[in-house]
Length: 245
Image 1 (tube, rainbow, N blue to C red):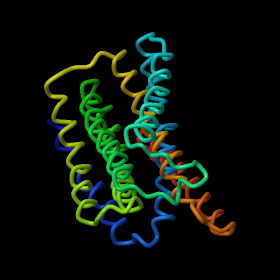
Image 2: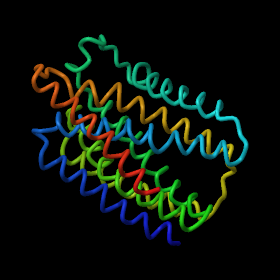
Image 3: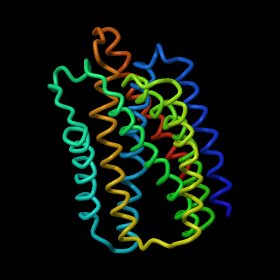
């Protein structure tokens, strides 16, 4: 039950990030640059280390999780290119805005938030100390999840009303995820595969969707500031994960 209560803090954190994005939508390039770094940081400093830690603790081969990462990355790429029939040339990608691309991308982040809640619940299955540590890390980066969700909706020309609805769904997802873990237990080998696939999703969203949009049409002077913000986002998650551990 403690996991569910802590997940309520992620609800507030996610809403705060999304409302911030709505208020400062004219500065989305800067917000997206920072949050792209956050996503890369979550993959590099939180998700993948957890995969290798599980492999070491339970004497498992992490290769399956790395395969799942590639599958997750390619799955989202295929979904965007074929299911959404997104036939834009790569060089012209930033000039094309399709609301359904924003919805699918935001839904992937909702799935990520749901799994954040599952992660909190599963961490409490290990021990209360591990659960609290994971919850702190999730709460810290869920502010950026709210930013990402609203940002992806707005840059693909979705309405404010639809963006707020997706934000609410994203904020509720961790609570639902944490509550669901009261009903089941996941073996470590399955958890590793889930984490790998999840990392592939985040990696694709960060490098193939958010970063190109953040840097579209940027002049050299501003591009340097945007790159610095991306590095700052990754450094922020690095600091959070080190402190949380």
